[in-house]
Image 1 (cartoon, rainbow, N blue to C red):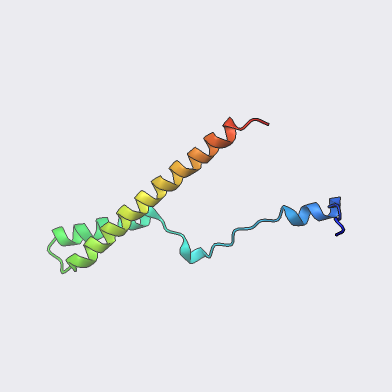
Image 2: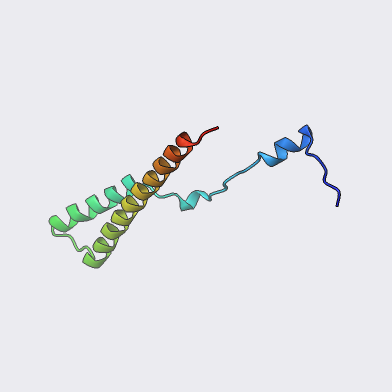
Length: 87
């Protein structure tokens, strides 16, 4: 079995990692909060608002926040782990 070395021309190919995330998958927590705030204000004014839809939007905002906090915690743990590594 022949093993070939990696030349300098191969290095740029190895380092090309891209994360293609579609634009419509991004979630804005502030947009969710604004929609909830508008719906609560409309409900307080006596407008006809679907209460179940409002509760679903509130739960989505809660889950978005919990997910964001969990991701932040994972990133911080990974950073701490990397800084503890001995080179």
